[in-house]
Length: 210
Length: 210
DNA sequence: GGCGGCTTGTGAAAACCTTCACAAGAAACC
DNA sequence: GGTTTCTTGTGAAGGTTTTCACAAGCCGCC
Figure 1 (spheres, protein in one colour):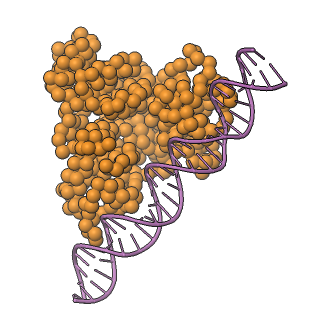
Figure 2 (cartoon, chains in turn red, cyan, purple, brown):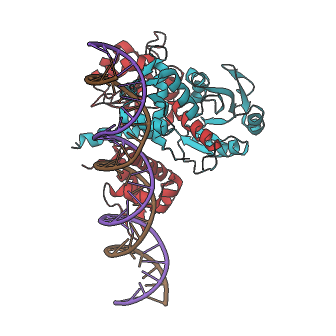
Figure 3 (cartoon, chains in turn green, cyan, red, blue):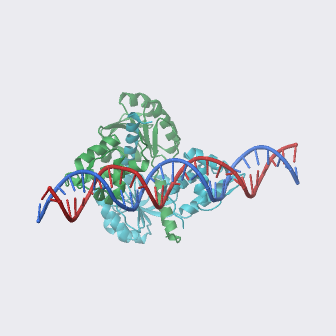
């Protein structure tokens, strides 16, 4: 199979998000209409979709519900995914209460923390288990994706333990580099790093950039 | 000035993060040593740096403290930045308590919320003000960057108000498309979208991809 | 049924980004 | 001083992604 670039996948997710927002309001959508709010171009939209097949009708556009189904299939979202949150500090707690996850197909089925005060309780209906039981509980509950919301110094070890327990994908909020853990897929979200993208833009704009 | 790609800026931030982690342990570092933990290559590191000048010494490598200074200058981090958090729900509260921001040069100088229970109080020493006073307070306190942690439906309006108040960059956790608001710089962090990147990888790996 | 207005799908071209490969400089050692 | 070893900086090559431009197909209308 042809290799799909990360940016293409990102755009497909974006198209899907937009389509879900307009589902019901509109039966058909053109590549142009889809491109504009996602900051893309109509040619880009068509190219992205053509990587996977032909889903539109010439002269008409794309059927919104069909395109939603297609994108969900492409992105692996025809089914729900079982997620564990590791670290129930402020960020972890916010994640446990975040509606956006379940709305978009991700069920947080368990959380882990080291704090014995928290272990055994639940938050938003989600059990908080001890990190010591991680491996067992992950297997028992069929966790497929881990979200790391621990302090950075613990992240590395947690990722290893998740890998051992059979988790195949991890999203980390800890700003550390997690190396290549083939076949595990790892992605890091670093708030400060994103902000630095902004300060770079602001600073270079101020220094006589075009 | 030459255009710098977004991925190059991201890598520069990453190099800086790594360098800060080893500052003190090591005086010199080679492009190879810098590349490996950041998942890059030595040639890439040298190319990235060469976009801005010559900072190394042939046969030796790069001086760690000098390179840190250089990268901070490039990214606009020789000074601290004044940030406002809009929306003090669970995520907003987590942000107000997040050490990683101030460690990396970002001071949260004020927060905003609509909830009259919260307005007037403070959290982690940060005043929570009414959204109605946003424009005035943003100006008074010289806010330069806004972080949006409100429900999605409010995000659009908040961004406009921040723009009117003179804020030039926004990072949004609300998963909405914020259009092109030149000259404002806007970036969105969407948790579900990142997870979708993972599910795409998992799903296409399972379907006989190489 | 034929024409005109739209919109897709897609090769080809252009732009952009990464990797290669090597000259040039620095240090250590004999 | 000369030789060896190391590492940068950088043109050139190679690869990937985006944009362009247009044929092919759909629809409505006369």
